[in-house]
Image 1 (cartoon, chains in turn brown, cyan, orange, blue):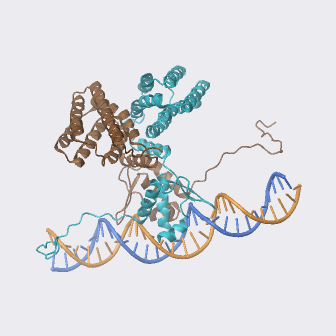
Image 2 (cartoon, each protein chain N blue to C red; image 1 turned 60 degrees about the vertical axis):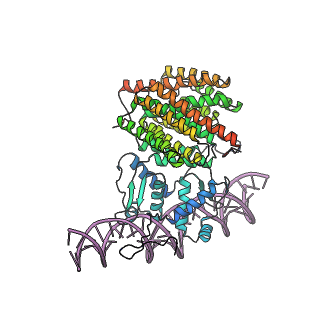
Length: 259
Length: 259
DNA sequence: TGGTATATTAGGTCTGACCGTTAGACCAGA
DNA sequence: TCTGGTCTAACGGTCAGACCTAATATACCA
């Protein structure tokens, strides 16, 4: 007797079950192959892939297909494509940029509230500060100090203030020496920047408080005091978020509100 | 006299200054146009874009160009392309999936340490639990309970245990009702799952502790007790991370270590 | 030596054709 | 009435070949 003979239903039919099958497209096959080689480290950063016409010869695929595969990798941030002689597809490791782009798409596409962005920052950034206090280098400190200087020098120029503000937050994230966290923070910072740049709530007082808070967190990081860093950063981002929330209530113009 | 007449240099040439200009590719132009329309909500989810050949007529571009534009949007998760009759490009909002894919690429591409993943989870998840305790619905609770049931029923089947584990963590994230945070957690959970599924450190004791911890966090969420939720979750993910770190030291096989 | 033409090599775009898959309608046999 | 076969139209997927455009290497000339 066969060990696993398919049983039969009332129709007398075999009850073999199949799952929906996927038939990959040629361009996907090539893209996957190349992606695997890039991620495995077989091609190091900056290595040029063969020219399109050469890939056509090697793969026996049409140029259309080859180009689609390259376009996929380009959008995923795995290659950078240059035109002209000595051009071609150059291997690139995905960086904060592709991450930030995806986050930006998610935020716009899902109409994520500004409040949710601020909440997320409240979750991540204190921890970043803690790690920064543990792992900071002198170079990290220099960047923090530079940002503090810029933000003090910004005066009442909103652009300069916001830019220096973002720079400082990114410097903290970088000092954590956790690339994933810093990538997230960079994405978040950009998104919050974009969402607040046209807001009128940043007045003299907000700027003053921000400068002070940044300095005190910077000091904790300089002194390698993780507890103080996490506490002060937590307080800072929380109060910043609160003042934005208050401002939104006050002005009664809730933007990006969920339906 | 003309108000802004360009001065002339010794060459007799006009001294008009131009900044470096970018010449976008045709496919990018179309992709940007369509992306803008999708994100602005002009096309709602599920609406089909015109067929490729129709876009060719409308845009006066070649089919090659149109297809490249659609491919870009597909990779960015903004459309889903189906072949066959009544096929075409259907509008899609970017979701956790595209986020998770990008995170996965970043992790592999940058060779991010498992330790960094665990750190990141330690940063995010306690905050998720806190929000979950505040905003949970009964539906959220049902999912948590279901995951708890599955994890208890998993016995010593590693697959089932890990899957139920991930389900529970995702359920917590969803209960926070912050789509950005939950998207991040889903990406993270998948990555940690992928990095630990072949590890032998999950023994009887680890499973037991995990089940208990999940239950206690679930209770805090059920009781709408944010403080307890954040405290217990923090303790749970921290001790989990610690035991992985210990295991890695013990087995002395540091994987994905930075150079 | 230094600028300038020219050739070469790459990607970017276009055309037109054909293939493969799918939904739907219709028909024929059990 | 169910089941399967067949046909057609409407899609995306793939292909081959051509030409355009940009960037650069290189030879050339003042």
